[in-house]
Image 1 (cartoon, rainbow, N blue to C red):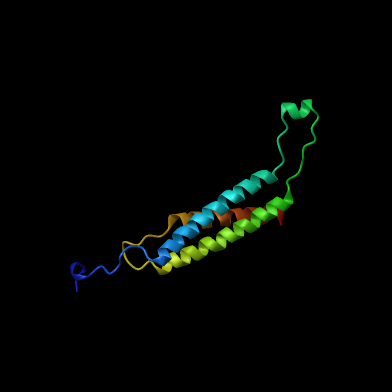
Image 2: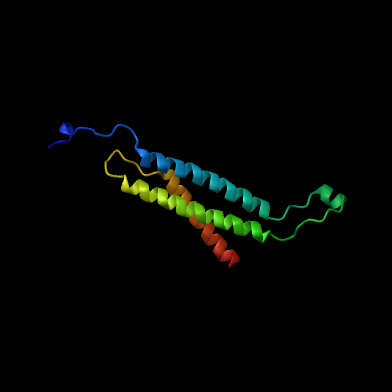
Length: 121
């Protein structure tokens, strides 16, 4: 049977495609949260007004916020991995595509995890 005689039985995206889409959205939210937590954990830069008013600034990183950021990154890694596994299972036709967002987020979270373990453990 050639390709012209095959009937297309799909009628739009199914629930698994929607699940991978929403997993990607949740992972982007977790990515933004991780960046925000990492930014808040670093010490503030001293400004002119801090010196003028003799304001005490934290000199070290906030390790509690970094730990929370690490756990959020782990959650993002596992969730994006689950979404990519679902996407791989649904990848049966030539027209199906891998979710590039999930691939990017897995790589970003993996790099973040490696950096955290290298510098803080």
